[in-house]
Image 1 (spheres, one colour):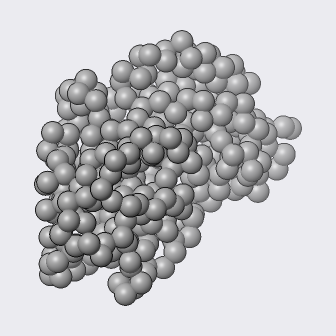
Image 2 (cartoon, helix red, strand yellow):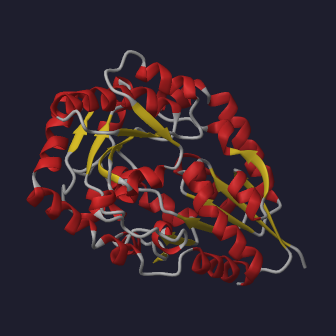
Image 3 (cartoon, rainbow, N blue to C red):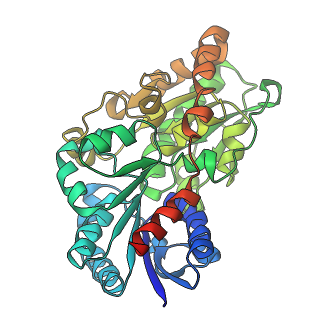
Length: 367
């Protein structure tokens, strides 16, 4: 009997994390057909990609409103796939995936959610809806298992994909770190908002130490013209590198847009400063939803503001450059930060990753 799994991941990171899951699903469920919203990584792993996430790379409340007709068509299309499915797997991307999960349950299609919605940050009040919409939840942060289980969700910690699935490169010795990394995000709106501030911060750093070398982590989703516009008239020279991991590993210090990249940078024990800027409207709306003190994911995981954070109006080049130069010059402060970062690989590696998620999928199909 043929088995159909519908999988939905709506952005680059989800596509990257879902690809090994697709491979494990094909190993553990013979003859499975995997219909997906995803990208080239999922397709390369063997999924039949019906909707390409590149076409829906939208960030922020205002951008979502402007693209509602397009997003509605996507949702209708995904629901048609779910109608014929034996299992629905949601990967991150909660704005769409929570709605699709509710729909799947109404259609008596079991739901497995991998990479949980961050209810601990912005919506514990939605816990009942998640519990009613999700059969199994595979979480990637250690504290999430207890958080969701207390809310009535069948959650299991499977380890973080950066550690378990993707094979972390070794930490680079300090003597090989020869650059200041600028990591402004992976989407156009993020880069447009954050990179100018990072460049201005870099100019101030260069004014204090002319030997500093700057490298920008370039996202493949963002046009070169966006970077050129942000760098126009800049008082520094900055190289471009599409290998963000290389930027993280070989940087003496990194200025990083808030998000998963802060955790990934910390896994390479690179000192970092967290920067977050969005449009005033998006910040106003987000500030009324977020319930945690720290916004950088690395600080959330460590339960402490280990890396300094500069958010919205406080994200000034002057403040960022002072914090950055402090880390460059203060060996004690830098070592204290990297010592805390050194615990992350063990903390996040306690599971079998997508191999276990695929087993959970097979269990749901067989029940």
